[in-house]
Image (cartoon, rainbow, N blue to C red):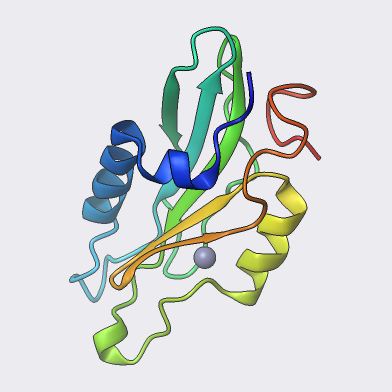
Length: 138
Ligand SMILES: [Zn+2]
């Protein structure tokens, strides 16, 4: 079974629901409490099921995605996180230079959920497919 592409994942209802939930929890309209949310996207190598898990909440412009929980028969196929700071207030919603570096180094696509849409960076699909270590492949 091939790893799903970023486009396939972005169109998947489970992934879309995870993006909506993370965006709601990121509290973009709360000047004090807004913060990054996000997590991990997996494929079950036997069934093809797509699953997500959330990471602990992050800070105003940071989120630790270093520790994907390992799920039975599943491989990590992508990460996602929000950029909560509003573009209407002059914040740049696009992926940061660190995002690009970390996405390229992680071996899986990264989704960045913002108030101007979802950005996709990093590889187009999990490097090496559904094989190797179940978390980050490289
Ligand atoms: Zn980011």
